[in-house]
Length: 370
Ligand SMILES: Cc1ncc(COP(=O)(O)O)c(C=O)c1O
Image (cartoon, rainbow, N blue to C red):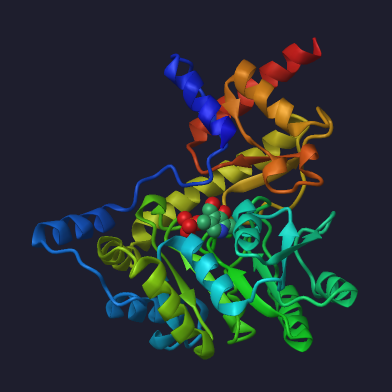
């Protein structure tokens, strides 16, 4: 965030900054989504909805599980939330007690760690090392040391873009069930896998809590709208906590989200642009000395090992921004122990951005070397 702010300061002075640091789509929500919201505004009253969300939206999400994954999910088990961020808070509050031990991966999305700590839960970071994703072996080894209460993992993951293959996910979930570890699966980057289809944790275990969002594939970050699929026993607790925390997700965003679920014709071309950007960076970044630290199979991130250039990715990112006017995210945000060796490049922008950023980086590296 400091680098984003610094990039904005530079822009305000008239500099042209190319940002590969952003963790959000560069496109607006599809036109049909904005039209649905505009109609709702014209119609007038926007009010509270049920704490679990509008029935029509919950039904459409249940239908989405059947259409997209072939999994039957009753509407009653779906809760609409103010983005997946609210979903984490609700899940942690409903599933765990203060002092419980919840495992996440390192590297991983930093808010997991921050929210868990803020709620008095013990964060157990499982270092992935050179493994692209979490495995049943990782889980068993950590649990053997000191038992865990919970596990949160994401596929596709942020910052690596790594996708957990279905068989590995099945083994992980079987191990978690055997060990009595409650699982949360963050599926916010579903829809954005470039090497195969999406696998939801629900295909392997109906008792997993799934968290998803309209932010990424649907290009709706600012609408703050997401959902959870809950095991039966968590529906009522989540409903009650949501009632007290924020009453309901914004009705306007729920109406818009309903339109988003049938906006594939607008969203697939955006995904195809990400795919082209990804192919370009997969070739170009290694040429510049940034090797892939994990296979970037999903989301819109390439997570790179930058040790050919530096052992201090934060200072390197600051210098790259100040001197080449290209922003990327230092790995320390995602991995406190090893992130000084890595950087995350987002390819959610345009192909022109990818070309311009890599051209500038190349020139800058030559200049530094010379
Ligand atoms: C892995 C992951 N989960 C959750 C979120 C939060 O998304 P939102 O609250 O917009 O749904 C993000 C945002 O970058 C993310 O990368």
